[in-house]
Image 1: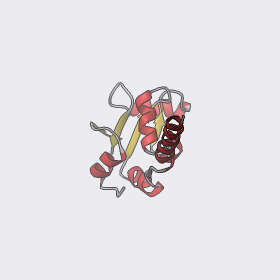
Image 2: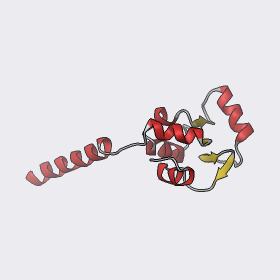
Image 3: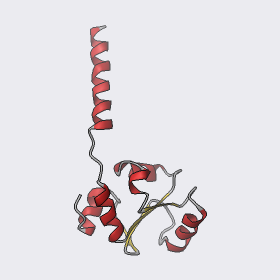
Image 4: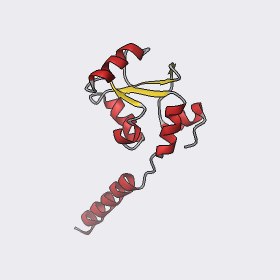
Length: 116
């Protein structure tokens, strides 16, 4: 019984740590990425795209550099068709050039010089 309670308390602590204890990139960082020409093409139905969004703290935090190529607005979907270099999302471009690495904040900070 006591072990079960301790396990539950431990699990709650881990969830709280990962939910509240993680620092996400600032709005200034995302704005710097935007100025550097970073665009992330994704889709709300793509698991990898959702994971990438989570690394930035959610869609609201990266909406200025993120285009939803699946269920976005008509303008977003058309822009995806015109601009994407590859065939699959997530796709990250910097200044119109395809970025081959994972678009994590750390990788894009290193590539663009934007301070994380």
